Amino acid sequence: MYSIGKLAKLNNITVRTLRYYDEVDLLKPTKIEESGHRYYDSQAALKLHNIIMLKEIGFELETIHEILVNQVKSTKELLHMRL
Image 1 (tube, rainbow, N blue to C red):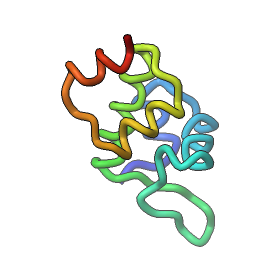
Image 2 (tube, rainbow, N blue to C red):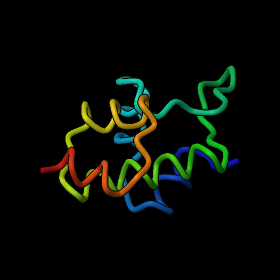
Image 3 (spheres, one colour):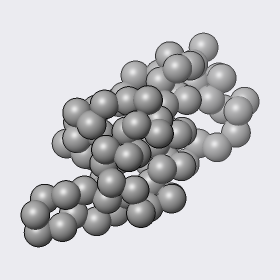
């Protein structure tokens, strides 16, 4: 499990970004303790990696959410969507 701070640091993003991704249902924490501390498992870390990669390609967050929900997996599909 990664704390929100650790996951943010490992991926060179801010804690605020991760909180925003939670707000917009893009990336939910795996576990939220009673104290409010957020934790992410390795599957969530992989999903974050994919989100970052799609952002770098130029996709907007709304489109990234759609890609993740519809489980678009092939590079060809992603490139076609980007065009």
